[in-house]
Length: 323
Image (cartoon, rainbow, N blue to C red; front, side, top):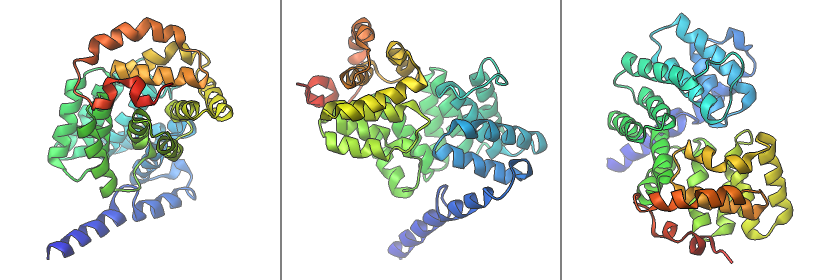
């Protein structure tokens, strides 16, 4: 009986989970419908197409569609949560334009709180609240919101993965990787961006071929971290041509990224010792971050002892297989 129940749950997740078979079939239908004719549900579905692999060209249409949706259906909590995540992306990916508010996170917080108020038993509002608090640099409230959402819905694989990602960025590898593995088991079709900690764990352990496989699986070309991962691992493997190509893509996003590495990763609440790993990897790939590394090593060391982390992160040079 238990095995039958497990099988039934697996089939249900495969069919109905976000990014499952039903989602894929419905998402295909969107391409035949002009965005201005989307229903409210289709606007939310379009958001999940965007969320699976964020693209700058989709950002504006998704935001506009969701704004129209919550204006037309003010009690549609899922649309409020989705729109909150879109505004959070304006901050974290610089997906913004002249029509955006000066502080997109303030709008994101308002929307996330609105989603929770409209559907307090749904985990989706808490997922949005978690991400907004994270980028507001309120780590404690962010993690509490994610945990509260999982308490409501322990099977929310996306929230599971979000929380696992955040724990890994804070250096809590055992906790984070466990959540990521469970999330992947629940929903193999989830966004590729959740593989970033798997890349970094392999990289830290000196398993560079595995790290390269993980980096290549992150099919999110409009996000700078995809190219950061590739640059780092190609640099370690001595593939100068590919490393330089990845660095060139990074510089297309931000011509002065070498000056911004620490600030960019600090706003994502990555622990300083891991930021140093990123910076050193980028320098090895050919990005000029040497000044930033020297200026920030002291602050990295100051916080290093305050975070529970996997032993391999305690000696980045050994873990990276540095020469």
